Length: 253
Image 1 (cartoon, one colour):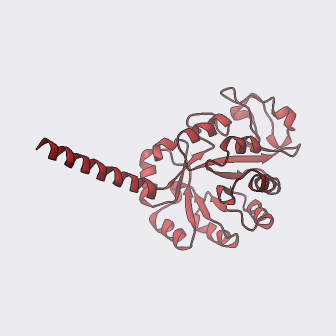
Image 2 (image 1 turned 60 degrees about the vertical axis):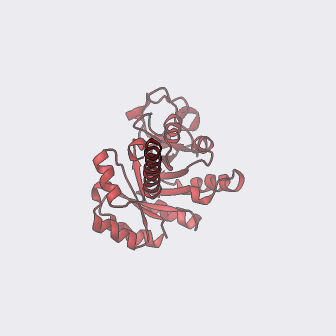
Image 3 (image 1 turned 90 degrees about the horizontal axis):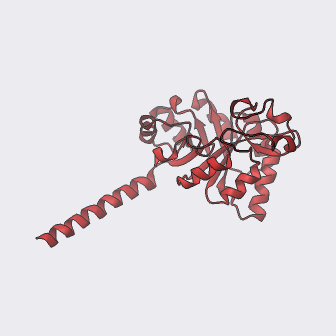
């Protein structure tokens, strides 16, 4: 009898694990927002490493082109909020920017620093925050595809600046693109179709079932931002979004 019970328990546990595995496989992609900024200073190598440690499917970062021409990873137009310096980041040269200290004793990385750290292990969503970023970002990503073993599919370029996305598409007809939007997500459908985008990335509080279904039926994925509360994460899962951008990747998993 004990042997029978043990066998039944084994069967039930195995069945439960299969169900959990199936749900996980069919769930949304876990996308670390600025790395894992709920744990480490945003857009730093430490934050990106933490996101990978937490097992994300994709990492989202923000980039600007600075005065000396480099593409650097930072979110704000100005430095004051999370650093010991001030001023517009686009007006810095790389020598001076390397002297800036961020909260938590971190430095501002260049895009290449992030690519070296990720090493093609997870997909990278590069948000074009600053002006005139498309050209240089395309140059860098093409180099990593041709010479460093990355694949085109492991990049995703997004922006609220749709003109910058148009510039990217003119430079590269194959680069995966996501349309970032703060307002009605359906207003992004025309530009998504024009640019042959992969996805529309709306704010989670602008989504409902009708909007989500409309976007999906139009042929686009949905990577929604920035979803940190467990109830909101569950609500997005019920809408069957394709990816959830979050400060706390472990909450989505």
